[in-house]
Image (cartoon, rainbow, N blue to C red):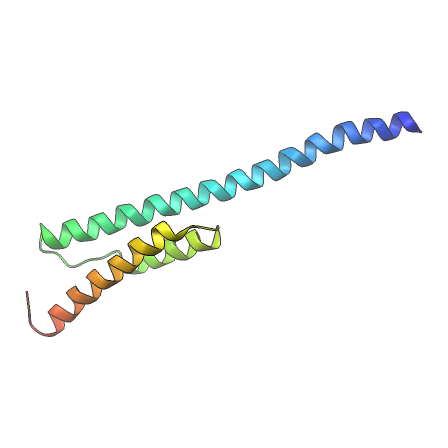
Length: 101
């Protein structure tokens, strides 16, 4: 009986550790992927508007990635970037509606 218990413990603990570690890594991977997507789309919009004089096109996708980022436990670094983007986007949108630019 003791041998069976020892065998179960020695096989179950590493298996559980592997499962927990894999889930944590997957979550971190999703978070980092969303962060990279957010930063890339912000840069695309700024470059498209400032240099190519095209309207920003990633607004909806940015919010989708931001929601994913926060769901995976993202930190305030991207909150700051998203707030800056929102202010920039609002100024662009406001400028277009008022006939500026």
